[in-house]
Image 1: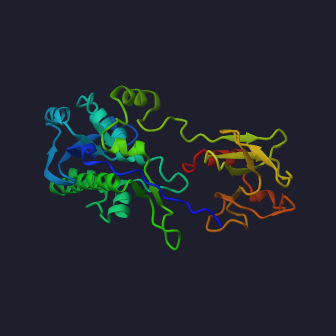
Image 2 (image 1 turned 120 degrees about the vertical axis):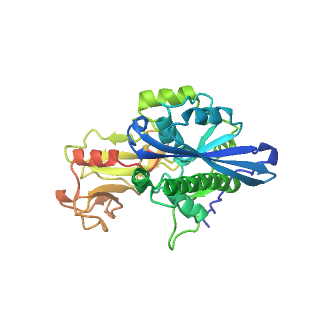
Image 3 (image 1 turned 30 degrees about the vertical axis):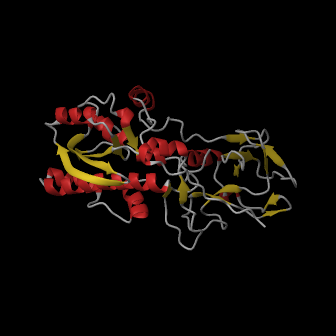
Length: 354
């Protein structure tokens, strides 16, 4: 009888371990640049403070700051004694605000929900936008499409922008409260699948970050990452893949994706098309050095392959082939990408623990 997978979540925090004050922050822009947020034209910065009353939270008044009120915003943030909440705040909101206010001492008391959740659900296409997470976990939505907000501001629709911004602050706080209470998150909706397929427990470390016990980043680390990485979240090689290339792979090899059950990481075996896979054969995981059985794996193919479905012609996709006598069925060369195309496509993947 197979072992039952236990879905464990960290224990809940005692009342004394919860922050007394939290503040959700969100900015709106009149002109947006996601590649260089420091060049954004800021429209407004909204803040919404919540005060804890036992295990409940009392909502304060929504407040917003315009471009002529950056000194007041800095004074507010520097003097705030609770936890500042944001979604992608380290890599966008604070980078947009950096030319205007000092953030030393503010970074350390900030919780970035997107940064905290980015390692969750690595085997699926995790939906980590505030809109998706709020809809899936809270059954709530934003007021307007965020892409339309800059145009609304430039058109003089200030009230609509502020209503949208206030809702974003509310959703950020409610998502934070949900994560802290449930200690788990849903990143997708399962249709006809396992109930827990897209449900992931948080780690004890993540819960500590949420409660403000340990900072996610220091101001010095935040600055260094932006200078060296060009962003505050991921190193430039965060998407790097591990390739194990066999010496006789040849000029037109196949690319097989294998998964290590111990360290839960994936790597790519590059082998010749006619390679024979022996019964009970295994190869060492390049990460943890534990033998990985060569019994079941996926092979990169093109959408034109008869084995691939629901893909357009020329698209690459990993397919689990049926193997005959430990060899793949004979397929034309056109069914598989060349080595250069294969590597380029695999290197763009943003899923799995490589």
